[in-house]
Image (tube, rainbow, N blue to C red):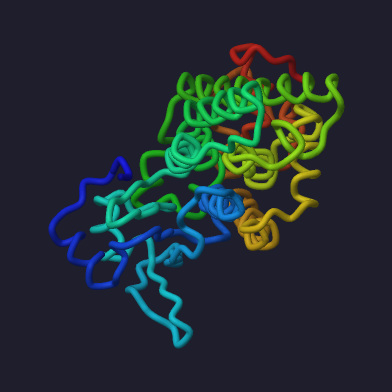
Length: 324
């Protein structure tokens, strides 16, 4: 059985039964989402693998609003992450994605993809390759929460700052010490990926996959990060971590099943949040720069104010990376 990480109430169990979500695999999420795409691609990959029992899972689309559950003529169901029903089902968390297996709920993309690997490992891989997949999944799980905090704090809060899962982050909500610590995590995370791909390149070249010659659940778990940090925060991933970006672009060209909505529509949301950052944050930036003496408008070198790109390589040497 699925090890739940959501405390299912009696009301939640009733909702699951009434909608027949208590049998088989049900996936809750929006395919555009940088989190949901990890689970979407993982499920599509597993459907091609022997031993995976859920060849026709149900999907419930989650939107970024308070919309109540609705069912279209074709049977597709959708509701908002801030709807009363989803808040009940998610144990008050109100975010995506989540899966249900026979009525048991699990949230968080990194937890879900790691669970899939632990339960349905790809035994066609060599022992060394399986170990590497596990290592990458553990690395992703260890850093995912901080990475998403960075994306929210310097990016998404400009659009969603008043929403439940964003209110504790954003401009003025965290001090300089917190920001330095987070950007160290970001740099450490991407440096590990860069080093991993450097070894792979030396051993035969890049092919879009972190392990071996085909897509694995490690690729699903890591799929969004280069694009998210470049598009949402304006971070110069191609320059800072060139192999990671090259590998990202190569995987994107293979168009993995379950990724199309994310690759085609996510950049639009990132563009919108970039516009809102300029509109809402710029007036307060000079004051912040004056307070943090290591930052100046001249040293930033990017139009977007106080991006992670600026923070990582301009807030002294706290992150252990040299500025350009």
